[in-house]
Length: 229
Image (cartoon, rainbow, N blue to C red; front, side):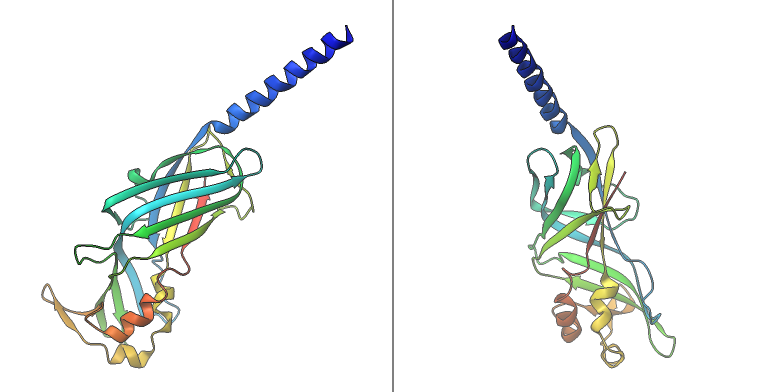
């Protein structure tokens, strides 16, 4: 009888463990949004309001308190253009991530370099010390790898994904930070280019190269990834 009792108990434990593993495999629908910091710089001279990024790949890897590690990746051989928006959900980046309590969710993506087109472009307005406003366009032309640690919007160290509650990963780039190293003197000496009939501060590998080099060194910094339910 005692042996039958232990066999029965073991069967129950195995069943519970199997059920738990199955639960951990159930996915949470996670949508993705990408945007830029749209706030005006502290000096009040710079603001960005639109742009895009051209992606070659997008990957999410995570570690849970229970359950195995997770790795999901999407490839875009021809490049995928993502327009920055605070509201637009990017269907090509949406994923079904196994539910669980994540101690780590790492986001990594590469820009797609090709066809002599920008891999990142942001545009906005620069206002000089005489209160004159000029359109500004920054065009990043190189491939770049972004590695961002995801955070919970609540500030909790654990990111909780539940199969019954869709989540959103909101990724924000910070061109205000990128340009924080550019001095007033550099802005004053910036060359203007005629862009579709408007005199514009165009910044790329061929125009305002010194500003470009300083900003290009910072484009992979200060990017944030926040998960919310």
